[in-house]
Structure formats: structure tokens, C-alpha cells
Length: 606
Ligand SMILES: *[C@@H]1O[C@H](CO)[C@@H](O)[C@H](O)[C@H]1NC(C)=O
Ligand SMILES: *[C@@H]1O[C@H](CO)[C@@H](O)[C@H](O)[C@H]1NC(C)=O
Ligand SMILES: *[C@@H]1O[C@H](CO)[C@@H](O)[C@H](O)[C@H]1NC(C)=O
Ligand SMILES: *[C@@H]1O[C@H](CO)[C@@H](O)[C@H](O)[C@H]1NC(C)=O
Ligand SMILES: [Cu+2]
Image (cartoon, rainbow, N blue to C red; front, top):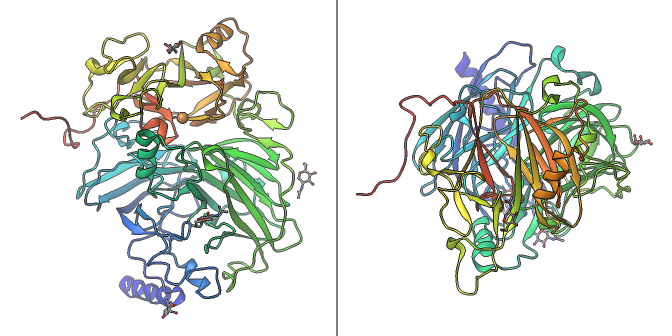
């Protein structure tokens, strides 16, 4: 009977949309359910493999009349920017399958590395991996890279709830398509914002990513070896799998609403280079209710910015006359003001089919109005809400005590090229991203498996530095279990209209201070201010996040209680910065070792 039903479903879906998905997309996974407090075990299979964007899975997809617009909506079609790019992705989808579970569920993802030549890992961005820090997906910190032809099963508790995501943590694989949403919901009775919206739909998840004309590997090589000034490299900002712009053949993503209802949207910025994205919806306000998975006191804004790695949830009320409105995603800095677009579509019936032809909105952008998460702005600028002006819905009293430890981490680029980037004409041209003047290098066996203090260094202990004048080492700072920690994250050096979004694995932290100072900042100046209580901090319901952007020439002050033993990478979420050393590891407490049979790797001198 079960079999018969399966065939019947297959039959129906075949004929309803010519859908011949080779890999499961999990749109109808059993774990995608009304959460009621009962937990489940949720299994997924992910295959990591190549496809081309646009061809051949998109058939005749184009917005031009000579093709077939409907082919663009085939579930296996990844139009991206309309060109053919070789991407390495999960289950032939970009973004990858959307995982939707309930808080406390056990998630099992069996990852098949079907790539012939590259290793991978997947980081579950937002998950705390309590008790099992070896499931964090960071190569050489929490596990060995998963080799071609190997299978690795990730197992973790869905905790905390909220809008999270997953992505490869190796090289340029994230921007090359290996990322996807991870949504963890709570039962209605345990959801303080439930009254603020009518629908929280799978179809209202927005993954943003920038798309380049050349392969990310080529871009990286050009940035660090050839030192090209890479102007005009971004082709589009992808909104889910669609990279519409005014001159290509790709349709804009659509988000359906019906008049009179309120919708919860969840937006995730995957990001690659320095690419803050400005989000606006013509004729509509957005009520922000959550950041990086944590509920906040709702604030209604007309505009907000999102940085690589961040997530925001907002409610849109469909209260306008008209049936199509632009949603605008403007990429700044390295994203060269390229604007991603999607359409907010008012339907008159539920589950309205996609239209047969393209018809674009004619709406115009409104002024910015009230802006949340302004980029590189000093605090207190009217019209701008920074992270210290948002409020959590809960107070965490312990976080406001006197910190047991305070550390300063200074993010900068050092005027000296690492040996691997040296070449003819390169002397003093290429700068190296550093934290406290240290360029992070990964150890050769995972920290979680083998404690290697002989390779560690930090600002106080530099005897293991290699590659002077820049100290290169496995930058590790150890923090005793249970302590209240304050980190002062400083963007040192000359202001350069960049900003580093910093992600801490394993924790959420309270953002208690944030400001931009002058045009050139030293950590020592900020240290003096902090130690003389001259910086303004807020500990009245500070918001909890896992990724925060340091204003250029400024600082962010974060706090957390070090109660999750593990080796937790903390790093700039700009891949071009992380890959060349802008990161460090916080060792909190005494991490447990993984099981005996956990895969091993390391060096061999025969
Ligand atoms: C795509 O277009 C070609 C040429 O017009 C046509 O032969 C082919 O059947 C079309 N494919 C689909 C799936 O519609
Ligand atoms: C639109 O995208 C295409 C790639 O699909 C790119 O070549 C073109 O330059 C983009 N146009 C604009 C105005 O950005
Ligand atoms: C958006 O919010 C502003 C300020 O609260 C308000 O004046 C305006 O009417 C709102 N617009 C819509 C479309 O709800
Ligand atoms: C990093 O090195 C520079 C140049 O030697 C120095 O001015 C700066 O104070 C150092 N930063 C830190 C955080 O030690
Ligand atoms: Cu950075």
C-alpha cells in the first residue's frame, strides 16, 4: 500500500511539473511539520557534486519570447546569472535543500562527497553543537576534511531555534554553491512572536549570495597572486537561485502573498567577499523580529543591511493596492552596487500558479527611512539603529556582571605578503589579513582530536610563530569553563570603507557596545577608552547574535558565558580574509574527544 502511494505520488508529480529530480529536495520531509514539543530524528542525504548553472537542467528557460519562461521554474533548474558556470553544490540545488525541523530534533545529514578531486566539510552556522563539538564542520579544527569518495554523517541537535544555514567551510566552495537554509521552528506556545504574523512559509526564505563572472578560484588567485584590481567582477546578486538583472535572461524570484495577511520572511546572507546588502521592499515596511535566530523586540523599518553570515527575520503586511512590488537587494563595497531583485506578488487565491509570462513591477524605491544595521556608522546617528539599540526579548542577568576575562582582538591587514603570495613585482603590494598581528594557519590534524599546544600562539605567547615578520600560527586562546567573557573586537588601522563581519562558532553572544571612531584607530586607543570606562555600553536586554560586523575604524563589544566546551573558530566571514588568516580559535573549557573511530588525518614523512 505504501509502495503504491509512492508510485502514485511520483506519477502525479511527474505529470504536474515535469519534475525529474535526481536528488531529493526534501520539500516534503516528514520533519517539516507543525512543531508541538515532540522531537523527531530527521535524516537527509546530501550529494556534493558538479552541475552547470542554466544548462542543461533549465531547458529553454529565458525571459525572452524566443524561449520558454516556464522552464525557469523547474525545480532542478539553477538559472543563477543566466550564464553557464560550473558550480559544486548539494543535491544539484543552489541553494541546497532547505532543512526545516523543530527545536530539539536530532538532525542526521549523510554527506556523500561525489566530487572526484576535492575534500569538503559542512558547517551548521548557528548550531551550538553542545556535547559534540566534532560536528561543527570546520576542517582541521573539528574534523578531517571529507575526502573524495568518502561519506560522513553529521549528527546534531537542532538548537537554538531560528533562521540558520549551512555551508561548506573549505576554500571557495560556499560561493560556488555549497550552502543552504536550516530553519528550526518552535511550537506556537513557545513562540513569543507568533501573534505578529499569519504565515511562516517555507517559500518565504530568502538566501542571498553574490555571483561572479569568473570562478571563485580564479578570483582568489587574481586577488592574491596577480593583484588585479577586480572591478566589474560581480555579475548579479542571487536571490535564492535567481540572479535577475535588467539585461540578462533570468526571471526574478517571486514571493507570493495575499492581501490582508502578515508574512514572516527569513533572510540569510551567504556572502563571499566584502558585500553588505541593503534590503528594501517598495511600498512596504519590514518589522524585524529576529536576528541570527534570536527573537528581538520588534522594530519597524524601511531599510536594513545584512552582512555575510547574518540572518534577519521580518514581517511584511500585505496591505497595499497593486499586485507586484520590487524587493531590492543592493550589494555594496566589493559588490559594486549590483542590485538583486525579486518580486513581491499579491495573489488572489492561495497557491496561485506562476504566471505564464514575465510581467515586472513598476514600483519605485522609497527613501531609506528608518534604517537598521547601518554600515560603518558611528552610534547615535539619527535614522540608524545599530546593534546596541535593538533589544532582546529576554534579559540575561549574568551577562551584565563584571567579566572574568576581557580580550582585545584587533582585525587588520598587515603590509606584508605571506610567502605563498610572493611573486615577481609583488613585494609590499599584497597585504595579509591578521588578528592581533597573527595570520591564522590550520593545524594538520583536528584540534578536537589532538591537542597540540606546541603549535599554538597568541598575543602573549609567540614562541611558536613561523614565517616572521608576520607571525603565522594556530592562534588559540583558552578560556576556563563557565567564565563570563568579554571580547572587544577592533577594526584597527586606516579606514578603508570595508567592514569585517565576525562569526563565533559554538555560541551566541550579547552585543553590548558598538561604535565607529575616527579615521584611524589603534587597539591601544580603544583599550584606554574601555579601561577608563569611556565607552558607552548597553546591558539592558542586549541582543544575542552569532555574527556581527565591526564598523570600519571602530569596535564591537560582545559577551558570552563560556559554558560550551569545544574549539570554536572565530573569524571574519569574508572568505578572502578567512582563507588567509583572519581568524582564531577560542578553546573554551576542556573539550571532549570524539569517538575512537572518528576519521583521522595528518602528515606523513616516509
Ligand atoms: C526547447 O526548444 C527547442 C527548440 O525550439 C525544442 O526543440 C525543445 O523541445 C524545447 N525543449 C523543451 C523542454 O521545451
Ligand atoms: C546582468 O547580468 C549579466 C550576467 O548574467 C552581466 O553580464 C551583466 O553585466 C549584468 N548587467 C548589469 C547591469 O549588471
Ligand atoms: C510604514 O511605517 C511608517 C512609520 O511608522 C508609517 O508612517 C507608514 O504608514 C508605514 N507604511 C506602511 C505601508 O505600512
Ligand atoms: C601590530 O603591529 C603594528 C606594527 O608593528 C603595531 O603598530 C600594532 O600595535 C600591532 N597591533 C597589535 C594589536 O599588537
Ligand atoms: Cu574581513
